[in-house]
Amino acid sequence: MSYTPPATPAEQPLVRIQALHKSFGRIEVLKGIDLSVMPGQKVSLIGPSGSGKTTLLRCINYLEEPTAGDIYVDNQLMGQRQVGARRVPLRDAELARMRGSIGMVFQRFNLFAHLTVLQNIMLGPLKVQGRQAAEVAEQARALLAKVGLHGKEQAFPDQLSGGQQQRVAIARALAMKPKLMLFDEATSALDPELVGEVLGVMHQLAEEGMTMIIVTHEMRFAEQVSDQVVFMADGRIVEQGSPHQVFRDSQVERTRAFLRAVQER
Amino acid sequence: MVVISELEHAAQLFPYFLKVLGLGALSTVGLTVASFAVALLLGFVLALMRLSRRVWLRSLASLYLELFRNVPILTQLFILYFGLTHLGLTLPATVAAIIGFGLNGAAILCEVFRSAINNVDRGQAEAASAIGMTRRMALRIIVLPQAIKVALPGMANFAISLLKDTSLASAAAVPELAFKARMLVSETYQTNLIYLMVAVIYLILSLVLARMGHRAESRLRGGH
Image (tube, rainbow over the protein chains, first blue to last red):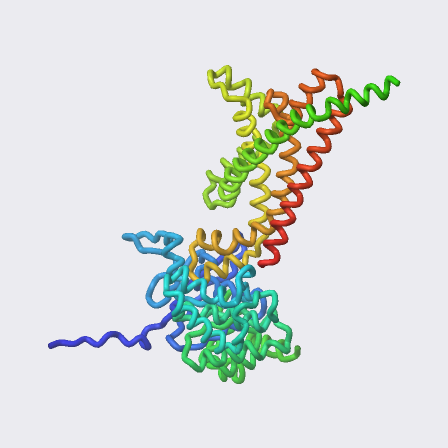
């Protein structure tokens, strides 16, 4: 009896980005990005504004369509299908299915303004995944408790603080049971005293082993949580490595200049 | 003396006027409601076409808008009512009017809907995409329910101006309020009283419409 063990997921990157380019009109925002993220890894993208971090993140779940290059998530080519030698764009429904397995948290929360907290969290599992209402409700309540918002089920987004809204947004993303979470400056729109509660939830998520790609300006958080820190400038990856290497021991002047500028704030 | 007898005469005619104008008002309301329904349906479809990713759908909708926005409604009514007769297609006056006001109103409501949809924060649709909704689902479940709140005042305004514009249909012999008024005037010469009554009836109908619009708005707002 021959037995071939399945390739352990840990051997394959969960996200593989190859030669990614993105232009808006004539402006090239991403100028050839290569990046791999292993399952369970936490990768922080740092860099000055306009460096392309957010665009890179938005390309991963195809909220932005890349101009060139490939993105594989869980070995599936994002947004395109190979037909013979040609690549054709995925149909909307196929793309939506792929996006459903990638959670995203936005800078401006983007909670559905006309729905309650509980409805916000349950909507995806119910309408997209077609799961049972009772099970979804139970999970949604558990997620709310997890992000520290037990009792806010019936509140509407505009009745919550920014920090609370962002924690609901995280719960909403987690309800889809994603294999990957993308955080796009999740704390940048928050009042300083509310940043901690959101970072706390992200910290907890990281400890549970979630694969995370985090665009952030919170350098301390990036240093504590990340396995890998990627410094971007002008649409390119300037340097990547362990938090210690990038934050404490960078040999690249561009990186050091950025970190100095950030620390002076 | 003469003045008093004229007043008396008018007073005697008042119930008759009220009955005839009342019937006319019913016809005006019917014409308004039917035209509004046509405009609502077609306007919504046009708005979706204008927001489509397909160029030909967008162009088609734009062409429609330019055509119907830039030709006077009375001209459109005449073309529908008289013009089509030449082609061997005779529409009853009321049907022609409903179609005419409906087609014209669709162009107005299309713009109301389009701007209401555009008014909904892009982040809402993005968040919907991010949890795996198709564009269609996102529109139906997330964007449209929020857009409707924004569209309501514009829809109410349109309904009120439509109500008043239906008086133009009198030129095509649709038996609505303005037509009945003209009939009564040529019958009795009581111009002042008749048009005063007509004004009051239009005013009441408009105020009722405005009230309905406000009700709908505050109900939607209250329930988020």
